[in-house]
Length: 283
Image 1 (tube, rainbow, N blue to C red):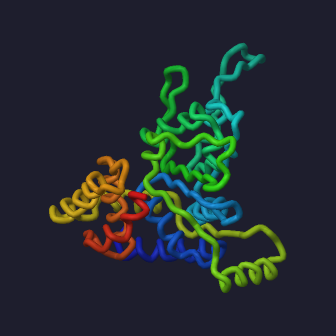
Image 2 (image 1 turned 90 degrees about the vertical axis):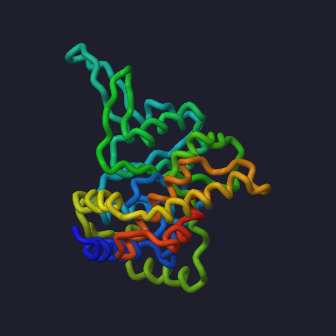
């Protein structure tokens, strides 16, 4: 696919998702560049701000498989990954796949599950595979985790360990809509006469995978590499920053700035690409 063709397809994708999500163009763009970068997303915000709807809308528009897991204190790793279940008719064990075998996995209120359950996602998010009783099973591409957590209700929650937070390419928030956008939300709901929102499949999974591969072909000049590292280095020496970004932060900036350049119709990155994604990459 040509860069201009990719840009047009991504514009079509965003416009389709905007049929469900009103007044949050910046957030939708941030989600898009993250998933194009093969990155996982952590959304920290209050209930009722369309976090689930955003994930489902992108999944429907791209034609990807989508599964949602509600994280609770009694959730077990096997509830996510799956388990070997004894089959009485054949007297053998059969592996029953869990919801992690999908394209987009929504881990809703991820911090409500204990660390042991949270850690069930680590291998999948980093290596795109899961291991059950010594056997590794590859996950289908693309595989993207979109996790949510509530920033105000901490009773009965388990803070995400730094190792897991580091697996997320971006951290973002949705925020409340402005007054005009909220009026438009009500108007659309009245016109639909239903809570359900139909999102059409506007690009194929195969085209989406090609777009992800195209990100790797975006040229990065030596000066841009130095610029990325200089930004990350500042986080390590600034007196108001307790823990600076790791080299994974530099890689996140690289990947996101390449995606931003691609969606801007360029085959090379410029400083503005890096500036635009710095906050969500290092937040």
